[in-house]
Image (cartoon, rainbow, N blue to C red; front, side, top):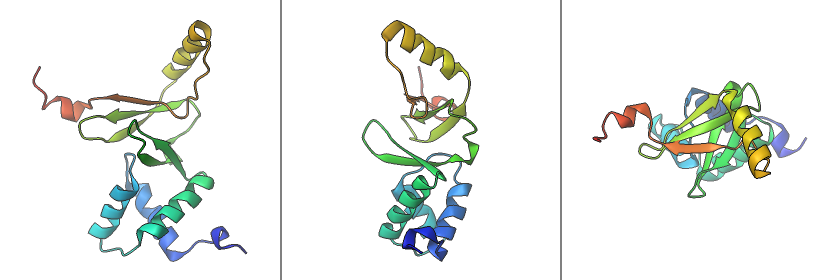
Length: 136
């Protein structure tokens, strides 16, 4: 049995913690969550575990415009037709499962002759919570 084919205690703890994170997260954010709960897991173990969980399809990895890796527990991704909204103020990432992405995909294919990967779309903007603090 290879090392990657069995669950370690650390891997199980990480899996349980990422299920509780409703928004996308970075490795640094996950490490902060673990540290705040006095769970001692090293960065190397976290990186290795996230690679394994991505391979197993438990998390989705994507990169923001600054090439920073974000992860999302994919239990809420019910289809290939989804995208993410990233708040450029608080940097939270929200999962959106909406068929409107189909219309966008068709438009881009017909009008611009470009097929988009609907599993990796990140739209940036300001979330509702942050928008209340911005004066126009």
